Picture 1 (cartoon, rainbow, N blue to C red):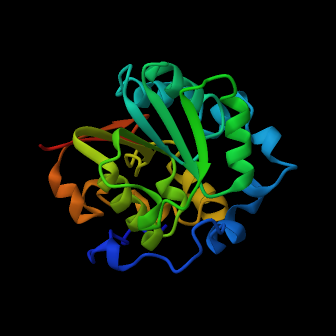
Picture 2 (cartoon, rainbow, N blue to C red; picture 1 turned 90 degrees about the vertical axis):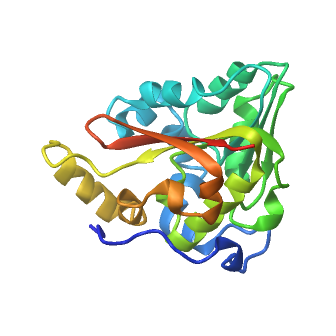
Length: 243
């Protein structure tokens, strides 16, 4: 495992990937085609019991932990599509007096999320690359949710995404990250997850020892609270923007 890797200290605004705004990133095509770009596997991976199994029975618990941070009437951004009922739970949480915007770089995921949110007029899904600064308007959302995205992107793209998401939060607004975290030494799944990361999630180890709150210099403008779940395997990091 790449335990020694840390966050990037340079300003992410200077490191934006040189890709077209709507192009699927090469790292995604190379590493996760089977998981996110295949019409053959998508219907199976999007089943709730599969999502629950992948997260060791914690899917609903983790989704609830994220959803409870938001309130009815908020303008909420979901960073990247999520398998299972998560987007609909967020949409129901903010209600029709609020608004949910979901942004994902993969057209197949955009189409799938639109299908799952069909009938909810206050929810929209669009294609966009969250690593690019032109994807999000500054201070455009009261709340932002990033659920199990950061472990699936390389460190440079991860820094850009965090930087851009923080910039999209309006003063007084909230951002929530839920993702993997380094387990406690005694955790029985520690060796199992090391192999899972090695074979299926190659970018995840570089996140485990990184302080999400310090990935971007914009993090200094937030008040942060971090909690861990399931023996440290998962983390929830909540930031409220000052001002």
